Length: 432
Image (cartoon, rainbow, N blue to C red; front, side, top):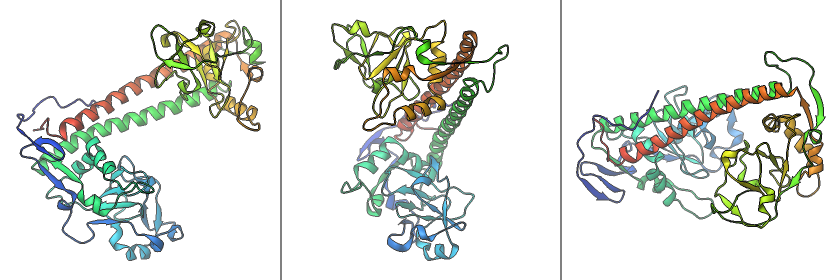
């Protein structure tokens, strides 16, 4: 499924009027939440407070309770706790039904979910949630959900929150939220459907990405420990220490402050510039200005390891595409002997559970955790012949490329969704 910004069959652009919510089409209305709920008691309610609902009330089956962890993307979901049917009857005013909207009241503000049509017919709203029962003759539930999930809706939620103690909101504030709405429910629903389709694509890509990452983790576990051999390779693997496979002893980086980035200076790589999956991800990119900086430039095949702090053991394999990099003092550089150890094979090996178990063991010392250069030399490695190392690294590299392609698609899909919200929820583009 491909999602594009809607580009065909637009209605003619119409005049705009200025409102508290910004410019909207002249035929749109800015409605308060209090105006779009059902005209019955308990259309806007919060969860029970005090001793009305506590953990001792939870049972194995009955009526599910909506808590913060059940506020998923779109629909209320996840693992539920339950209260008995008898307890739920005592909390009739706090029940949510399919089609209701649920807002987080305290804790993780900004979470909004729709109560799904199945598998349950009713839910108890917990102490930290609020629910709306909307008048579907006036508004589309999906449209209201999409608006409050958008930057404009989120801004209202956060700007109006009570900041004393833990930031929170209340039913009075919820009633005062405003929403810009097209004049007909049909047009609202068309917008909601378009945005929901974009959400479905994003969710499918997120699931695909998670699956591919899981497959890669399984492949690493098998291929890097000889549990599975690639076709054409056989023979015993040899156990060595990392220090036996290096061109020289591990080196410590330069102790110099970071300066504002300049293309006339080398970029600086520090522990904080290395992502958990071993990529150079500076935020922001900085440089180092030191007369000896060139002695600390990384070369293709080099790996650096964090030697101290909470990130001890984190690693990065230098890539020429990252430009000229000088490595900082809290990093240790190792230079594999490419006749014995493929640097890319090592880069994958130090992402495995085997490696991280070793890191935890080695860094269990008083004070701040750390591993020095001599200790990194003692890391035990199981190595096949060089050709098999390279083949394994290539398989995993291909998986990384596949994962990166999905990440790119996901980033694009999210950007398109943001653009669609900006256009459709403000009336800049009207759907036929």
